[in-house]
Image 1 (cartoon, helix red, strand yellow):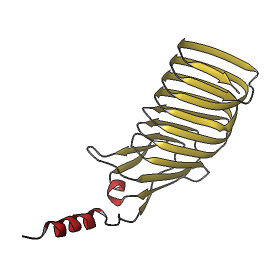
Image 2: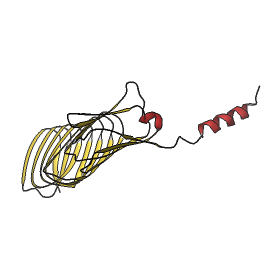
Image 3: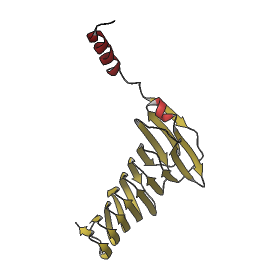
Image 4: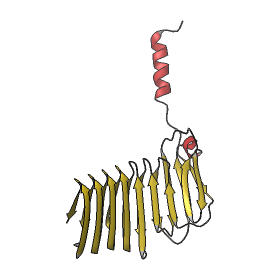
Length: 205
């Protein structure tokens, strides 16, 4: 029988083995203008005229991520019974909307155009940056949206649950809260309307 310390060191060596290097996979997809995410990923997106989707991270996890475009919406999902580890999805496209369900950590930069819509559910967290005339925000669950770097003229924000949203609106803010959520608004909007059911609050900064 091998000495216990040899078995211990062998186990330590296996546990301390270097992880697999990041794999990269560029997905061939048709053009799209919106994103729907149902997989637990890290998302880095940027608004651009060209559509491109690249995955990076653990090669086994990347193989479990599904991507397809339905009616102009990029669907990012995961195969049944898959367990993901360290997957980052990098996207460029002429985006005007995103919907996220689940544990997603994401950023969308260089937003531009007349309107942008974002909806999150679960424990998702999104940060938005750029400019738009009209911003539509919907938060369900415990998610968080940080859009203080997205300069909007008007913002329509709805929170159902305990989520939070931070926006920047220069003209008007329409805030609806059902639960204990919180809305923080920058930009000194001239018109503010509130509808609050519960103990949630709206703060102007």
